[in-house]
Length: 123
Image 1 (tube, rainbow, N blue to C red):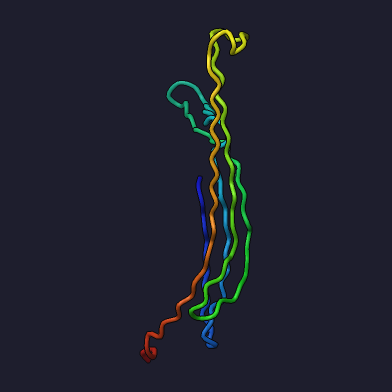
Image 2 (image 1 turned 180 degrees about the horizontal axis):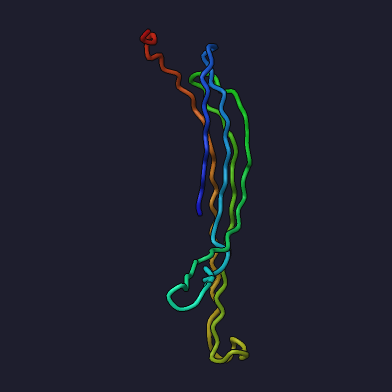
């Protein structure tokens, strides 16, 4: 989980680079569940996370040597509320607290290409 970036560069003879990019941004969506199978000595358990993901499957672009391009941006907002009371169905006014938190993550993906000549190939 997190941010995953896959890049396939292909330098051309025209001093630019063909880039193929793929992105995925994922986060945990609820508690991790445990799946158990078998009995006794043959029993096995596997933890199965629930994830929510946003991604761009594939992008092709050409970037000139020394050029920086904005590829994409991800904007994620997370909100969480915690409601505590003295009893399960009692209102907050009888005692308790209500807490809210909100966070925002903005991810900007830039690509800069620097083609370096490594000399002639050995024959």
